[in-house]
Length: 361
Image (cartoon, rainbow, N blue to C red):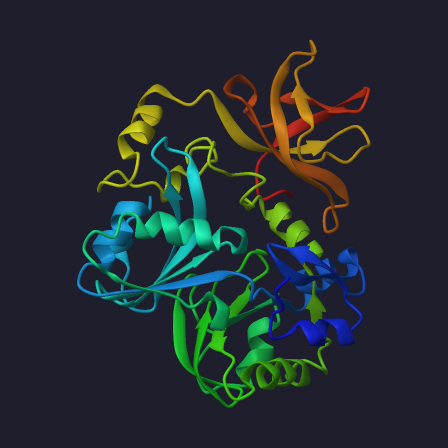
């Protein structure tokens, strides 16, 4: 198992550790519900240094990104980021990712899921016929997500860059906590506001930045947060998790990602996905909330009132902020309207649920 530069910090803080995407990662410190509430109401720090980062450089960098991603990266200007997806030749999702425009048409950073680093690198490389300069900087890049309504207020004391007014999906680079060349991005996976910061661990930068953040947030009660609360936070927002809610067999349209799928340019399997749009998909990813008592889990069958199999649960949890059980799952298109009655097969029981809009309320 790999460690991040913060692994020892997590252990010293008493985190419950477990393997995730080949890394030794913190699952929780004081408990998922407590950590979840800290992010929703105040501020929390996630170590997400296991994520992958690729730099693409050169005159044809944008061309390569356009050919492999679903969104239109030509719209990006310097300092802007974009949520997108890589698609395979059948129209399934290779991965979801964020594209950062560092220098328009010339320099970009792609941030990919930890479990897909090698897969994504090989996939993008297979389309690199024009010798775009590619660098996999995943192993030397630290990434901390500081999320919550008070996150930027706490962090502003550590930099002269204006991060209080950083617009959603934009980023800046500069000096932070005495460390140069830190990229601060108004992105995250919680829906609670805040930023993500990328930097290299040179000259003890990781420890310096970690300690500075917790010192700055001490008075306001900033907390370290594990992957357990990261999952409940993203699920309340209805955000997809690769490997659960999206994968190589799900198309962007089925996953509700039509908004990041632009047919104004050519990309892998664009004709297949465009045909799906024209004819309509037969299933779609929906949110649902439990009416009967029970927790939906990944892989549980979704049925209609007559007991017919109409879909499958992809994610589920007891939502800490909402005090109810929620989930995501693919269901037949006839059952996707909000408030549609569905049943989750939990062992020998059929538990009633209803389709819900996301973010969950």
